[in-house]
Amino acid sequence: MKLSKKQLNRLILETTRDIRKRSRAEKKKQLIGSKAFRESTRKALTLITEAATFTGQSNFRDFDDATIDELFEQIKSLDPAASIFKAMEFTPKDDDGNDMPTVKPDANKIAQWLEGHGEDVVRERIKMVGNKIPNTGLPKSEMPFLPGPPDAQGSVDDVIDALTPGGEYNIGFAESKKSPGTLIVERWNKLAGMNEVAPPAKNTLKPNTEEADKYLQSGHPAFDQKDPNNDDANPVKNVSIAAADAIPTQTNILLPKALGMAVNGVAGGDLGAYFSSNNEILDGHHRWAATMLNKPGANIGGFASIDLDAMGGTTTALKHLTALGNALGNDTKTS
Image 1 (tube, helix red, strand yellow):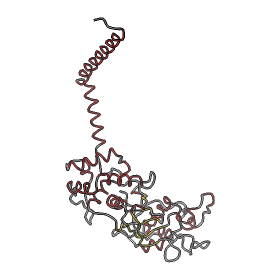
Image 2 (cartoon, rainbow, N blue to C red):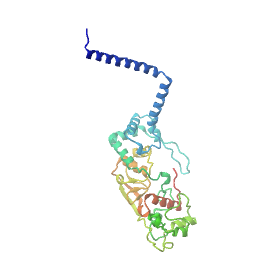
Image 3 (tube, one colour):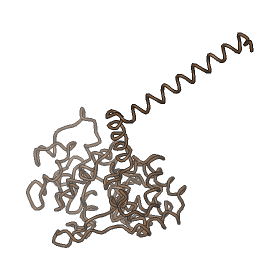
Image 4 (cartoon, rainbow, N blue to C red):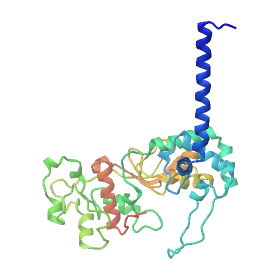
């Protein structure tokens, strides 16, 4: 049979493709058995395993859809060796600071919690928490430790006193909101050789020392005769807001820790923390995140709200509050 030119060209193309396909298949067979292929496969599997491994430091803001998919698969596996369940383990301490037996999560309880809320709902709530976490801010180790919790020295009333004019205390922070070029080195130089714009470094003030007493009274009328009423952070005790309206100030909010709290029923209530007057939360971030996973509309309560803008803005204010906690006897928790 005589082929047309068009048919001949088509036959040549099909034959060439077939030869190339066979050639690639042969090369692939040779490659699979090679040392280079085995090594590249090992590296690829390692990367996949690492990408699917959760730790106690897994942050909400690192959870995209693919990571959430893996989270759900591990939860539904009920495998106690799965990395999410290992990440949720924790070791409590007794009153003397000694380690107690490690607490392990109940895989069935976590899977039932996920099924009860629904994967779509939990996915959106994880993203909601992650999207609220600031790109810049203070880690837990830089956050203030103020009176209020059972293990803290002093009282909430001491904090209120220190942040309002009059009373026994009143720290000086008003000049923190002025631009550096307009500052007059005044009270701090007279009192402790420190500029009011730069709060003392964390854990440098010790209670019942001259430096701590000077800081606690640096805005007091006895030392601030020029404007004795300007150091006012307008604190309000016993505040309550919806969890969804709260704004975190901490950058490292850990999903395994919050998930464990959520599964155990945390959904609103007292955070045991302070808020800003703009609904920023200064502590209790994991209890807040657990509430967001369970019931974003639930109310969360705090010891008091504080006007951070009056203290020079969030970052400067938190440093002042850290120094205040230190002066009252509470070193910042470094972990």
